[in-house]
Image (cartoon, rainbow, N blue to C red):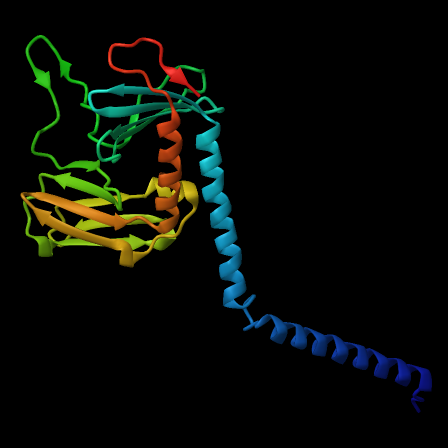
Length: 257
């Protein structure tokens, strides 16, 4: 006959009581945090994301401010050259009258330290090199679609020339998971996937409601309204750039900061 020892019975009761207390405390903790079984309440998560984004925006501002900058005033443009601590270079051109960004391009050094080619981020793409031989010249077909970015003060904007299709053929959408914009046509004649580098640098989310497009004269124009964080950053940067004492046309020594 099996005899139940009293001390074992009491120990079992204590363990059950302890487990129940732990479960109860976890339940109260979840209620206090607004937990819905999959994490913190939405406002806590949103707050953490906002803090992270603000830190990323401020980090990019600090990187721009700490770079070595050279200013040149030429041909109605304010031209700024940035040299960053990691050796990367960025060149920008602003319209002196409107303060709109006309050109932004980057240059990186190779692993061996050689200077790379300039890569255009904003503005007319660089002309493709012409390959010639004794009897023929090979160059890009001028009827191919030409993709370029040209911003306004309030929007990021892309223009794709040589797209002779009606507007209802085009589909333009945001893909949040891939952090990109996708352009495609129902006739499967054109497809383009690209990111918004400004938002990537600041780790800002993409919003489909900020996206719009028009089509005229065989050109598709895609616009994305700049978020307030970007507008604030650009205004702050422009104030800093205007403080630079740029040289005038014909001068040799460019002022740096």
